[in-house]
Image 1 (cartoon, rainbow, N blue to C red):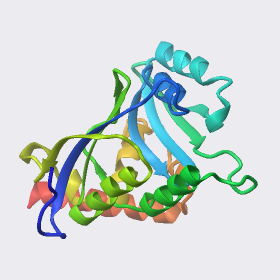
Image 2: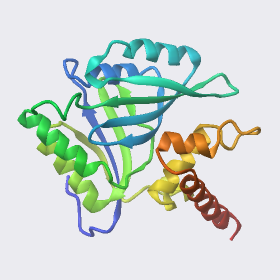
Image 3: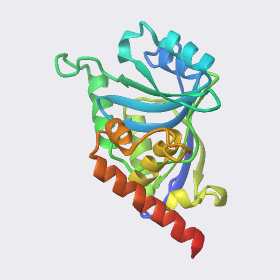
Image 4: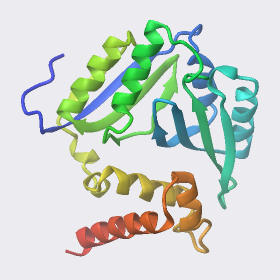
Length: 236
């Protein structure tokens, strides 16, 4: 399927990646079936940080399923318990254990190069990533040039994928949140997930800053700018 014309245009891309049972990724995707990925908080060449939500039972199943999984040094911590009884988890892991001390084979080197190229990319998640039937499904909005780089990068590191949709963003996905910067949108979603807007408030800017590894004042400024942008849009 061709990816067109204007390199400045935003495109919506939905694609699936099959996860082989013998793959090192398989234990992670199997574990993530128990809970829902709310937000990809960090995706870097060294590893990843996810915000996930599930019932206490789902949370317990997830934590049991990742215990003793060495490839990713996976860990999960409960960072919020909602009034409904659901738990919000901070899930982190590493793609390549001991990268600094180990000699990488050719494929690992290509993967590392790909992760480093994409880790600062301004993607806007449309839907929560899903893991079903041995496949990871992802929907994003991104600059067309960036989508080209993503797909060519997946081909280069020999990751099979199937494009389910690519084209202009659908009308229903063009919400006010998609007009925020990637940083503002990410911090706002995290604040909401962590109970920042609950009454009484269940988390603070200090807690958010610690999770984001950012200065408290910077987090507060991003939140205020995002809130002002959304309120201006509603009241104008």
